[in-house]
Image 1 (cartoon, protein in one colour):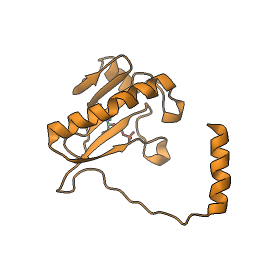
Image 2: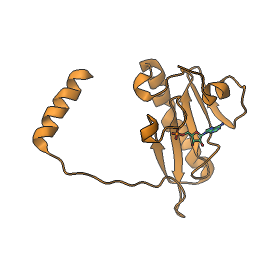
Image 3: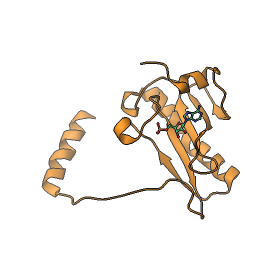
Length: 137
Ligand code: AMP
């Protein structure tokens, strides 16, 4: 895949406000924050979307995401937060290097706004779909 701004940040070619780094993971403050403390957690592996990420990088991110979330909460004083992970332009992805947003949600409303329009669930179709998904895991 082509080089993105996040690969340049990992290599130190573009400045960032780094909060964490290990062998597989890098984290820094989002430059267009939805709230104070908005942090991006990225794998060093240059995968465009989550479904293309290796198990090793995925495990490394999963291992530190709770710890980084706790650190963001502690530093900001927030008690609520969202984890957001966009894949594909239609799903609001702008940078095609996997990233997890840690977005503190504050009493004053700053943070992630969510539109959640749930649809009717059909149990017959749901059973067939669950079987199909399960067969591909
Ligand atoms: P997404 O819409 O999920 O692809 O989010 C991309 C995020 O990357 C946005 O929240 C941007 O503000 C953030 N971003 C883009 N460039 C930089 C940068 N140079 N440093 C920090 N964050 C950035």
